[in-house]
Image (cartoon, rainbow, N blue to C red; front, side):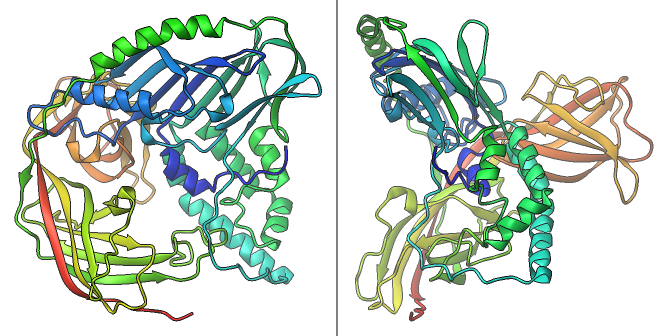
Length: 542
């Protein structure tokens, strides 16, 4: 396999979101046709199950599953499938997909693209059938040419290596958090006898397995960052070693070999009768798809009054080198090319979360429409709430603004935010205070219990599979039901999952007791329009 530029690590974290758990079992025929039992689990943020007056979760889930079936690519037809929404908000889908060409197969995965080990080829090579697994090449944007790498002195090289290691250590906890539940497992049943097997494990029963997870990736990154010779060689070439996993030594660490492939001597018969199975599957699938095609009630949305927003700043990126400036402290060189406007404004009330937003109009003083053409580019995904949750800051982005325009005459859009009218207390069925203890509600789990470094108070780290805005607080009780005195020590959230730190006041946590989550309930979703006029455009000449 030629060298592949695998996903930039942080892009991997953002693309797969760390919460994908994917398992595929393939059955391949000599002619390239096949079927796969596709199972994927995800804590979904694409659909908000907690808001919406009069919309049953079951109806929302049907719409999600319909998208999974219809938006997957390269599928000739689906066979049997099942789906489930668990108590913690996680969605699990399992189905049989038939395909004529595995290279065109691409599952929707709830809209979360997996760019790692997602390219599978099955071709005839020198009278043998060859299976090969690779990953998407890192797609560079069309950017200004990067200056040639300067020759570094020993002192400069050592300083750069040290800096990259320090940056990695600062972000390692975040990486571990994101990758905690990332899993990819692929199993293949092939039509013939193996001649060569590289990077796959042959199992009893004739299958070949590739098993990868986020913990393994993190271990490999640790190994890379601690390999002094590799670090110095890569940094000398101007690479960000952790972000750019592209060199052959790094690929061998990542894959366990130079490539993942198996060559077989093809059998005379297929593993299964493709035409017969797909004919039956099509009839069943059409029937089930009609059952999913129910009309969902419209979610009740309460409209708010227009907000008084103002411009907080702009960012113009004319040159970008995302290979060498992937660190969070390197804007704008780690950013996409374009023009960003940062907008700030008060909210009508204290809110739980600003969930989403979109641009609706953008007109310049020359009457040119600069509203992004793609719907996805109009969406406002990332918002920052103030500490009192009464103000919000967000960005809108444009790939380019015309030189003929000096101002944006009109910029309009809307934000959606949530409030809760009441709360409820739920026992997580987590009855022992020890690392690794697991509850029955919302996949609650105690990650660790250990003393804090600065005051030695015992701190418990609790993982709950719920959106952060649904959790108001957590209460801890001893075995007799007495409330323990605790204090929050911070939280971190990603997707529909929260890590909560609580310190006990005096002493240590008892061996047994219970943990309760106080959840926000009875949500209302508001739409807040925003409008700005006469925004000055700054132009930078090349």
